[in-house]
Length: 298
Ligand SMILES: Nc1ncnc2c1ncn2[C@@H]1O[C@H](COP(=O)(O)OP(=O)(O)OP(=O)(O)O)[C@@H](O)[C@H]1O
Image (cartoon, rainbow, N blue to C red; front, side, top):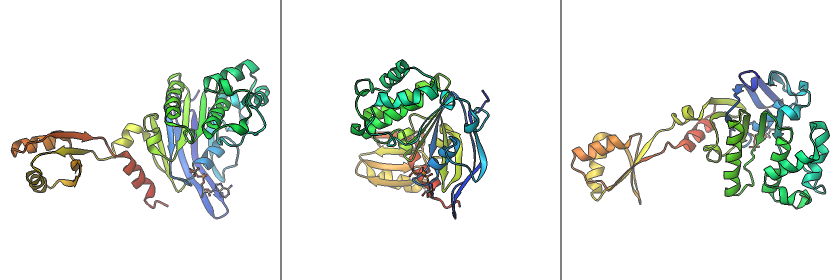
């Protein structure tokens, strides 16, 4: 397989006068989980629908394993996708649903049962999907995606409707799929939801690419901060003022933005200021995400 499992070049989709996806170019690498991030309505689903050959691009192209989706023979053996969790026939059982997909995927009924077990739907395999919770539908969507044991997995907001336990389970599952060398592309409008899951991020806003990098590079855009507790807040406030630190005071103590613990600790020590707590507060990635995606880049 080519170095990038999914390759998107100048991908554009217009609906009338609305440009939903605007000249997107990025690659998705195998062996990694890539988060496809953007606010509601930023064009994620439209992009994924083009990747999966469900709608035609207005311009540009998307290729999977070197060819457009529609040219892949038995695509479900190469690419597994879950776009909408709600589009299952409510009268069908989960097993019945997978069995209808088995011939085109070239898999057995045993494989259908196996994959339902794998996503935690074993006990519910023979129940009608109409009675499923949102989380169960998400799991069924995953079962469909994984049915053909594909190398490339594309999931649209798979964490929606999952409870916290389900989210942890999903995270482990996606990590293990990537660990096996598979390509995992997963969309979300909630950065926090995927932050512990993804290796790479592709961030879009208004249909345009904002950032495509490793998560670590993305995190480096965020400013660090330090939390401080001191029995002598007035003295600390004077020190912060003297140093020109951006400081705010809350019920839990001070927050110093843009500094690290070593700088603040040394300065306090030199000034003879007693500290009872000094903590590095992790980079505030959520605010970077909001800032990047709310700026008007159109
Ligand atoms: N078939 C369509 N006809 C007209 N407009 C559409 C169509 N599909 C999507 N859009 C519009 O394109 C824009 C992007 O929608 P899209 O569903 O791709 O965003 P999204 O990032 O997936 O959002 P969400 O997180 O809410 O699912 C939106 O303004 C949407 O209303």
